[in-house]
Length: 263
Ligand code: ADP
Ligand code: MG
Image 1 (tube, rainbow, N blue to C red):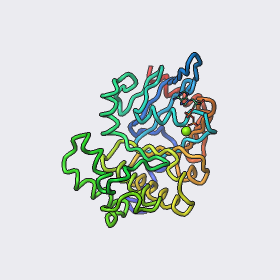
Image 2: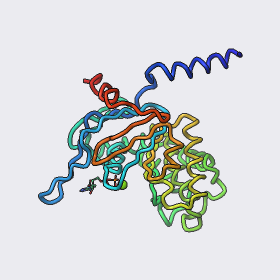
Image 3: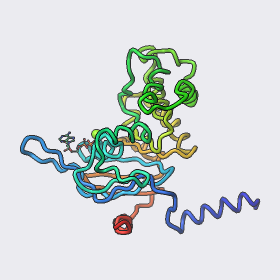
Image 4: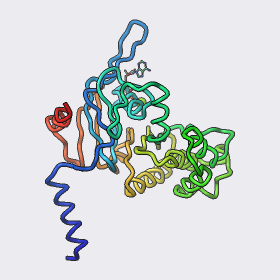
């Protein structure tokens, strides 16, 4: 076997026997989210503990109302937990002000939504460029063009969203998420509004970004999408009920261990 081959075999066997040593990107410890609606309290997350490491590709699944969006909103710094810790790349972000959160969101998180959320009157290029203005990023035009090129859409740079197909719109949204070179990409049902062939094209792009080292979390209802991810987390009633990596479920004790190491 070649030296390179040896090395690869080595890496594979280490991955099987030893704990994952990639640096954590996300650490949630006993996270709770309680919404208050009038006099009623809705306990949307009930003690979630979770570590997601660099270059993981994670699907979050679960019935409607199980807490997926609540979790994604907190992960994306769009909302804060009621209780518990959230560390993003080691920084405690659970109790930051809205202004600080907005800064972190702009620099560290790339969002992809089911409904694309593009600005209708603005070209693809400007849609990708605009968030870079808020983070005072330099060489914005160049960065935006590079991101569009990455999703193979440079030839549509000057088209507005109504001149693009659904799949092209979602590619613009992915380029927008990428332009900032975020720590994580969070995608909430990214293929939910697309036909299955177009959905596969979008997932192929996410797959290749993952292969290049990107950390990606996808909320999805579809088993076909979850199969592409190495790790599948299932939620029910605000709790993680299963967490499996490459089809191997991780026992609850191991997951609890992760949190006790922290405290
Ligand atoms: P999912 O995305 O899995 O469908 P959500 O996170 O949207 O679940 O919702 C989890 C629970 O929290 C549900 O009972 C939902 O009704 C409630 N909920 C979500 N957002 C809010 C909110 N802004 N105010 C009050 N309750 C909410
Ligand atoms: Mg939801």
